[in-house]
Image (cartoon, rainbow, N blue to C red; front, top):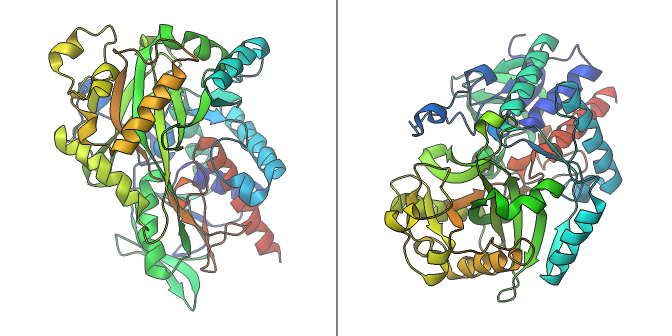
Length: 467
């Protein structure tokens, strides 16, 4: 192929994968290069799954590599334009709906489960909605297709092999050090190995893990951005019995609340029935909490976990929401020796540190075995503490018991998609020849919209090539 290609895709997450897929389906003669700092799918192995202890892989196999964080995520595909990003604001609601349907068909083609949750339990959902309204919560109805952590890995493995067979050049273990710009136009990239690749079109498709990297690149080459939102909160863990009605009828209940004290937006996110709490490691060894759920009965637990996220929007002169989120996560890491902090809700609202002794007499056994008992009030600002407490008391009116003293709160969960890049309908940035898609650009916030975004960007490239 040499160093001259037609399209360069930076990042091999869902956005980049589906962009490459659509390009090769429509124009198989294209020379497409995908550059990814992590490993190929078959080399993405996390030792912690066996050892229960993080060994500090660099880069982290959970957050980087082919399929990005999606490869080891719970693998929930949100099939509504109302959930998962800003595509409707850019493309319109109906076009976003069509793209989500088309990306969903690709997932099905490569082995996704045909079951869709949240479609057939109308009376039960009415009951949940009524309880939510009484508690001043908004229930966002969203059909969910659940890949499962282990099945999602297999599906993305098939997609990787498909792209390789189609002729996409996949470069793993490779960082993009520089986006080359000449006369206001992006013309290529320089890697950490000193290689230069020139391309007619460049697509930045980095995920949340790459958001900070792309923010710095925006500053270096003058890409227009706007301050975005940062989501900060905790991962909640309860017994399955507490969440049973919601889990059986919605699988993932997406609930939004505006807190009475501060009128802050708080939402539930990423529910994992019979799942486990997990640690994700970002660049520099930053540990943040996440959660997974498996399809196989072999890996199921007795607990359900989900995130409570407080959305913070900042105004001038503040321009660094990603750093703000990382700063809070580092405070937690500092207190726990680089691990995740866990506190019971009873201790949380009484303002006292959870101890090993009190945690040991809990009915809820933590699924994150190396979590360190501690005090989240030493980590979060007072405002976020109040938001989390008020959200839990509101949720308790929908699913009683969730605000019990033994409920576990793990911190910190942060979503690093807050760098909002200014793009047009074709996802072109203020630098000609450079498009920005996916979570790392602040365009999407999840697997399905990121995948749909990749398809849309590919079609824009193909239209331009036809002119």
